[in-house]
Length: 154
Image 1 (cartoon, rainbow, N blue to C red):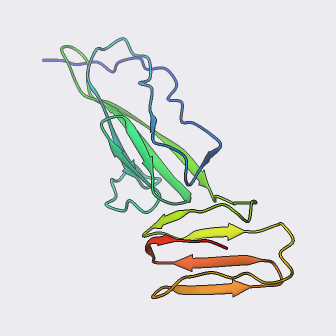
Image 2: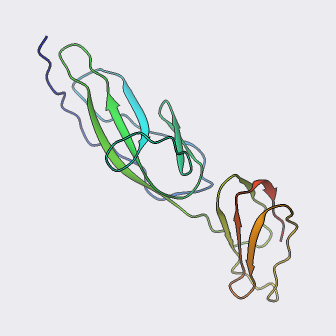
Image 3: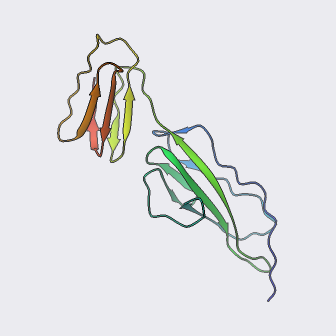
């Protein structure tokens, strides 16, 4: 059977997302086909990646797992006279910066940065054990890597 390309509208990917934001839903692009939409995390060329360091997708729900740049591929499956078609969009998840020294944050398996811009007499006290960390008292920054469920109080 001869199939034709569906006509699809723009695929909108949210902007201004920050590591720590709640999961969000992707909205299907408009199309003259009623084929199902499937979403995958890909590289710039649309090749699926197993990496979930930045985001993961289940159905059309995106969970933010870290910060950085990655790509989402929206694929409409073939149906009837219409072929399968895909569109790829870049998504940027920004680093989360806490500015209140009384904030408490739980960190799960990923890089996380806490920038304390409040005056705390040039020191950062923290109760962290068993993780790699770098404390810079001049910039009042704690950089924590590869942690599991660490609760920070400072």
